[in-house]
Length: 443
Image 1 (cartoon, rainbow, N blue to C red):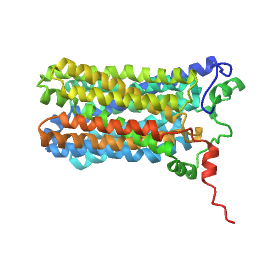
Image 2 (image 1 turned 180 degrees about the vertical axis):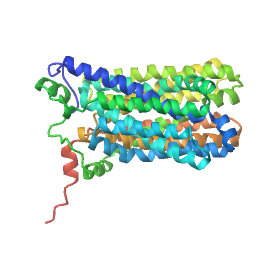
Image 3 (image 1 turned 30 degrees about the vertical axis):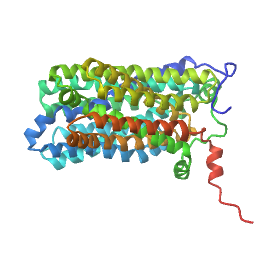
Image 4 (image 1 turned 90 degrees about the vertical axis):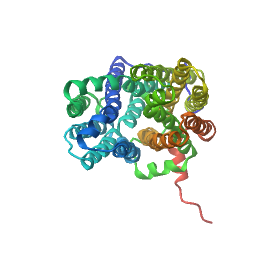
């Protein structure tokens, strides 16, 4: 069966491959954490920036949304570019661009300059996760891609949990402008380190054993170069659309919590600002554990005979259903401690979905389209991410409560869970793309 492995087939990674894997994952986790910390800079410095630049709350909302929309729409071309030019080059360029945007953000004098810098931040950050997905596909056997995806995906919740205290310390010590500039300098150093150390598989002379480990279980006759025709053809498969719609709900709910969790605790739960800072970090630490558990679960299911696609789509869908249930429970429970526990469970499951979704992109399509389909999925996700803070804010403003907003998020999760379970089908192969692209026969 395509996409599954048996014990007798299994090969092991050589010491050199293991060293490459460890180094790549370490750098991806670090760059991913910086990616998420940099997203939070504007939110942390919000009051000081408004005061110094004379901006309104509405202006800050536009600045926050500028990143989300540019990040979402940059996914489609960036994913294709990662597949065409490979992660070594594209991630280095992306890191450098978003880090320069951070430096510029520390130098801006007005709203217009800040808006352009935020758009550049979104474009620069776009290659991070498609590149990580391609690195997973390039250097890990299919039975090992789940946990590796879970490891680099911990950057999201980890960066979210540690970002606020780190940025607050920088801002209080050096001011908000130097907070941006220092984070930009860190990113530029990371870009140089990544480009210097990381190598794509085609840049290294691999042994037959190493090639067998990397490609075992992959469909035969895969092409190494991506073409625009193949990229375009991905939109004609239901699996691609199932991934796009499924990830929409995952990131929609993620951004409800990412953007509104402190406000929810303060406004709805009447917690103090000091307690909110601690309470809002706890669920995202559970997200780190969920990310690792999701990857481990996907690998275990593959080793027990499930196809590579099924080992990812079923946990992703079921975890989204669980996220919906715990979110609704958190909305209606009266105890603050129970609310924190339920939200922690929801985010734990949410990151199981997130990891399984990214792991799915590493097995759902031919190797030369891995980053492309991952970026398409992330595009759908961040359409949800861009809508979630606005929709939530409007509902809270209209109802004076977060309850309906959380219920709406739960409903979105259920719809996306159904998308994973019922729309995502089998692995898309090169032969499938060629067959679908054939002109109709006449006769």
